[in-house]
Length: 146
Image (cartoon, rainbow, N blue to C red; front, side, top):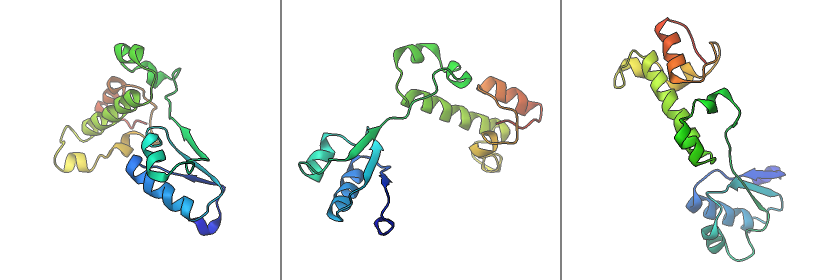
């Protein structure tokens, strides 16, 4: 990776992995930018990487599109309690699994689910849906959803 002299390296891992990768990148004298999720770059990285060696690591957090139709389907008590990315992402993931199960005729163990992975209900072609109820209705009608 470093042989191409990239302008930016994106670290995608949990803290223990990020410590190891950041140390190796530092030892290789990489001078470009490093971007990593905020949950992974914390005081443990600074301790594990060494004082001053976290210079140049940028943190970022993902965030849902708060005005999107999908976010409006997120349960109000949870939405009011937090505006961090993790709960809405978990909600989306559970909805995708449930829609994949519905598309697989409810068979969560055997071939019904195996033949209906989440990507078959979350990619074109198909009608854009923003809730389980909306998607399940179209699936029951034999229509494709996205």
